[in-house]
Image (cartoon, rainbow, N blue to C red; front, side, top):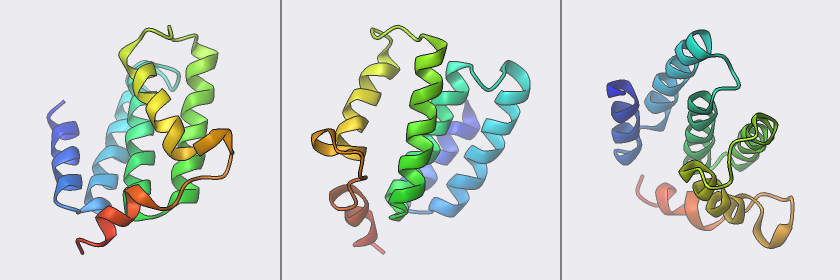
Length: 115
């Protein structure tokens, strides 16, 4: 949990590459501990996709997001789970108006302007 908070704090500081390293380590450890289809691993996958989005790497972000969503659907996570609500909001960002093309503008550009 502490490493996760450190990774999130690094994102706030716009230190995305360092945050990605921490989240990659976390996802590897959690996958070994609980398996790749556990919700914790899928949540970390979405966190990593969000970091890529903040970096402006929209294609990688959308690919990771879509992969996590597919695994969540296969795992039959209840629609009422709080994480599923977050995914619904992210769906609008990654695939606006139902279009499968990722949305490059608003979110990532906010972060890129602060560099």
